[in-house]
Length: 492
Ligand code: ZN
Image (cartoon, rainbow, N blue to C red; front, side, top):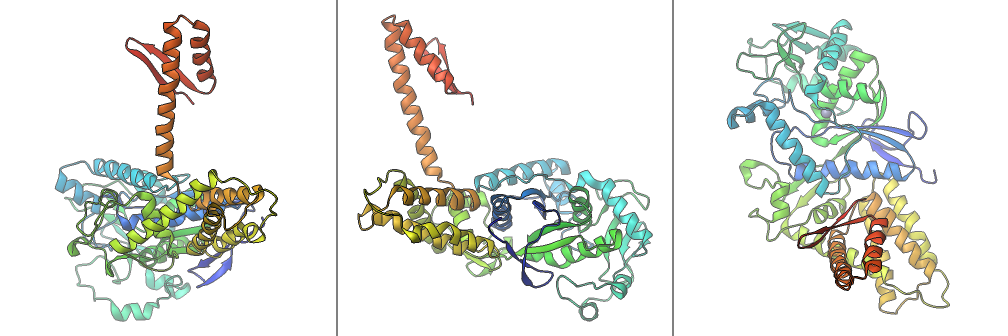
């Protein structure tokens, strides 16, 4: 592998050379959405960030098993151990089965991710489909002495764990400080300490999602699913765990504690966290009226937007910032990204029609563009750095168009490979306008070809009409004669 990959590891708080556990193979786990509402901008950022990491790893020649889960049980309203389950609440309000809510929003999430050019993960496990594995993990933690049963619920014993390990190793928090800052238990609580977290919760009578367990009819704590499913699909230790920075504490901190308690290892070698999106400088929230769903974004129907923004525009905008910085979304920033993306894609199209200049030698700077773009991407996913290299390529294309630079065939080929490898394959930017245009051209051509065949048939020129049919078939286009003419379909 020509390029070394460096990743900022939240655990060590520094950039580290990436060394996979098994040579040539990477196991990656990313916390996916809790599926109880429309996909929004907050989903787009981790979706795209880890998609680029997935694509980059593959580009570097690794075989990647990418697991991104669906949270469909146990994520309570206030992210802690109380409140209603987010999915159960939606089901109650809309008079649906919880799994109808899960199905609806999982499909919508998939649709939005597909539009954004996010590749599907290798495995997408649902928490509700892994109750048995989660119960087994709870049992292991109990057996190891790091949990206690209280009124049918099971809680993780943070004090005990912290005496032997370090609770806070990921987030840098110190338990003594947490103790000072947490509320006192009100005496009604089943927990011994306010910072203990649920591994299993006994279901209240009104709670509609529950399963049998050795402790009670209940449901797993939210943090547990990622420990259990990560181990099931990637093993007791795996390479990369990603997620939004808001998940670092308590979700990922608890995951590490559960891993150590149940299997004697922290489990994850590189923790990667993407930063948040703000909207006009403010945190996105429904109460502030700045909550923009991806559908509203693509249709331009939100009051904060002056126009519709294509999924590729949103993707390009997100890639213009480094994943560890916050991004501020605003209509103006999107308009600027729209301009940049159009300029880039126009250059890609122009390059296709560019004629090489006779007698000119290859340009050294052009040969360096792809290694430079990869240097940026392998330096902790520096996507803005890679885009700025691609904009240098745009300048070369435009200079050749204006005849202020002479590009030979080798230069043109290199630029084409650069756009294909870096812009399309790794950054996942697709020229949807051009592919729509392509469909229009194909349909125009087919009209023309079928018109010729119709004339041939009218003249009883069967040789020509059959040849058209057979030749189309050999390139994967099936035509079928109908009452009022002819239908065609692409078969491969
Ligand atoms: Zn998770």
